[in-house]
Length: 126
Figure (cartoon, one colour):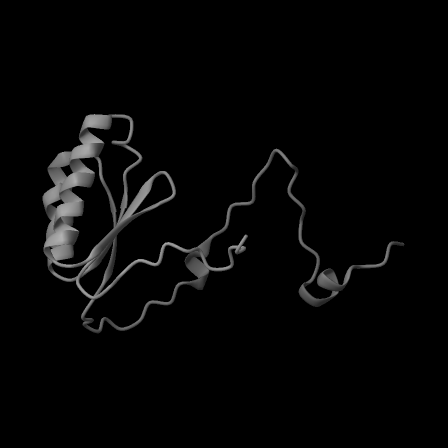
């Protein structure tokens, strides 16, 4: 009988996924619904399908919210993507906020007094 590893003894054994499979996590069990209390700034997550909902996203930043935008649907159209990034950059400039890319498919836009640190936490300093 094989001896259990320290991790298995502490956390219990888990089923192992095959290399071609992936383990889907249900993060819903970790989310806690708190009473709705008003906040000065919200983090809004959006999916940009086309230019038509860009106005709504810009309005959220003007209201003082942080907006994380999924641009996967428009990134194949370079002209549209350039227009969107230009308009979002102008919003960030107008309100003294900030804008940055998060990977290949997301952009984050912040309102005044919130700047984005471009260094990744935990990244080596080579």
